[in-house]
Amino acid sequence: MLTPKKSLGQNFLQDPNMIRKIADTLEAPRDAAVVEIGPGTGALTEALLERYDDVTALEIDERAVAYLQRHLPGLDVRQQDILEVDWAALAAEKGRRLHVIGNLPYYITSPILFDLLAAREHLHQALLMMQLEVAQRIVGTPRTKDYGILSVLVQLQARPELLYRVSRHVFYPRPNVTSAMLRLDVAVAPDLDVDVDLLREVVKTAFNQRRKTLRNSLHPWTRAQGIDLPHGWNRARAEELSPQDFVELTQYLAAHAEA
Image (spheres, rainbow, N blue to C red):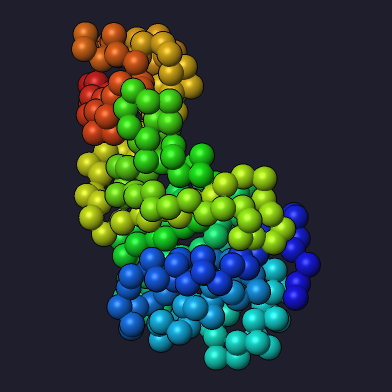
């Protein structure tokens, strides 16, 4: 057994019942192209191999790669930094969209999420374990404390669903937080008819001062662009706008900045 590396955020699943539950939750066809992020010692990987014919494991830890090669010789395991994966190329290699599953290191959860969303046209779904508080923010709704930048940007590019909590007691070593399984259904997400970089800038600027009205929180940006917000948006706060409202606001700002 490997000693978990704190620097890699490793917490290995150990509970057989939870492992089976997670593997069953993926709900993909037998011939699906399944990609596991950070398999570690392969506890979940073994369960996936029992259910799917095409499983690819992406692991940055060379010790874990060697361990998996010894114990699961039929597995397609690749030493790979998850933040450097070319998801489009991997989907092209497999000849179909990918079903992604994994226990995300807490310290890089957001970058992985946004990489997957950027590659959503190459994915069917992503079933991800993450810190419960992060999952709650992703599915947050307007006018709640959980609603924020993650909520808006994820919900515009996928349909997120918080499935269930995962106790810290099913891991070794035990993390200090409760985890949760989140499903991202990216196949249903519409194409965004907006400049995504500008959208991200508007959302982040608005929520950086979430208690202020948009007239005040966006003022440095609108002043620099020479734009006045319409009355309805002027008096609203970021936490009151739906994700689609942010798309319309960004479209308005883009159109008037170019005028």
